[in-house]
Length: 108
Ligand SMILES: [Zn+2]
Picture 1 (tube, protein in one colour):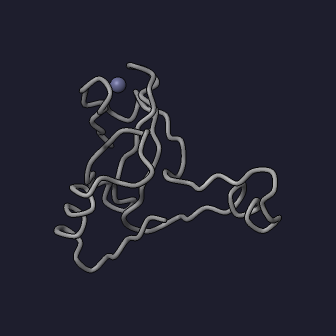
Picture 2 (tube, rainbow, N blue to C red):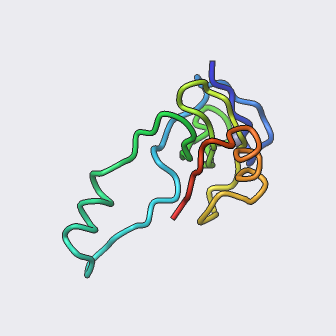
Picture 3 (tube, rainbow, N blue to C red):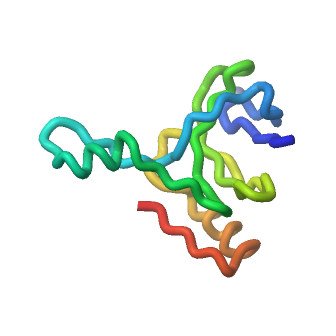
């Protein structure tokens, strides 16, 4: 079972309390962007086998959105952090590099 620490209210919530929100740190495209950029933003998503940065909502708790870094194969959680960020915190990237030195993840 997936358990994520909600950084907003401080509770360790299991997956029955959470709602997934897809990929974190998407670059939003709006009016004036190219058709290719808008299509990429709207439809194309990574589905990695390994470390992934995701949005989650503590739906049956505080109701707030947050981000999580986890492995999609093992459910290993590297950390959760505020959704009001444009990139993962350095400490989470360092934790991933320490535990998974073979995986190099870049976030745009
Ligand atoms: Zn919460």
